[in-house]
Length: 109
Image 1: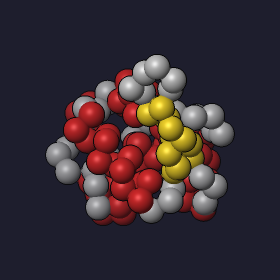
Image 2: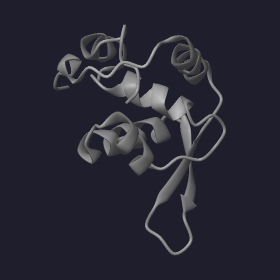
Image 3: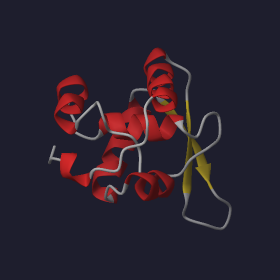
């Protein structure tokens, strides 16, 4: 699971308007320049698709990530992070913060 401490869900909500956006941003940055799928983010964070898909859609509409297409012969969609200050900060956080698996910190957005 992605590190969510010390940025707890309530802090993520204050900063991004969503309790899980910080967690999703950090997980996306763990892929570096490599493509990722929503399923990979779902599996890594343990969050349901109903939370992940709208956040990915929001990140795409704001040009934080770009849609690369589908895996040939599959329904899997691929995205890639675009370089920007917010994702660089999330990447730095992901490197510096120890992974934390504490589902009790999760709250609804």
